[in-house]
Image (tube, rainbow, N blue to C red):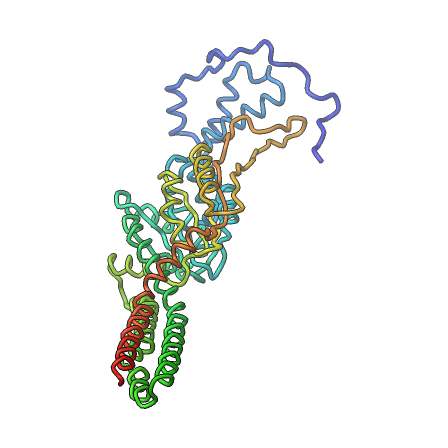
Length: 434
């Protein structure tokens, strides 16, 4: 409830007042001298006393005049905690270009759309002075990992500045790891090779069973032919097929060797990562290697935030293969056109579902008696967010299955060849019998 004005209201108006800079009796030189000699409130009182039009103004205009002069000459400050919310507001008010015009309400929406939570692995590309990374680190509170990609030109110093300006827990800062964006293509190839090796390790036992069943059928057919012609010759041929060393080695030894190799490849990054994390001080190369190992561990990060100065289409195309299926992602951009193009690309490829392109509506209002209205000078837009959930397409699944089938071809191929050679030997023995 807004308080009402006293009975009678405000009388008069400002129709006869003109801003010609002649109503102030003090000159600019005198005001500069008074700024060094007087306090801010004393200077404001002198400006009011030397204004020829102050008494002619309405009460509303007088309050506005006093508020503007106090803001200009009276030094005041408010002590607030150094959290990402206040750091974001400070950047937006003082130097919004360094933070890509990121507003605090948009930052909160980014964290919500990407489903940033404790215990998750988060992939972030941050060109907003490290504010997004600091906000994610504050929410994780050391439970999980934050993998920050940086470009070679800017380095990781800009991201570290945002963490340094925020009062975060030591565990939250230690959970942040950095890797170079120049390594994205190599990381995607490593992810693809690991997926193929996992699929091949799952299909190799089935291939071995097929080889064993084929050998058994071949043995039965060869034995039946030998019994119809000559029993002693068949009895001599049967042990050769059963004890064939090629069948045993190809059907039993090869799958076990491949599975052990795949298991070793899957376990090695985890062991290396734990060994590196226990070292006292990590060099930049070792820290980047640790970040890459965490990035490739398991199915990949479960969340991704892109607030970068690079093209959203290129960033999404390069980094989507690195996150896990079902991972949520959010992309921030000050203008809507790049995100609209990325939205059309994702819809055409079918790599994501629940795609949304949103803009926050944020308006600050002045609340005063009889003059409540939106603030005249405020930001027009806080940026745009593209969000969605990654899914696996049928084409990607079939490609992985085809690659896995090719890798298991070496296991299943020797068995038919060995059986056919033994069949020819058995047939020759049958024909040579009198």
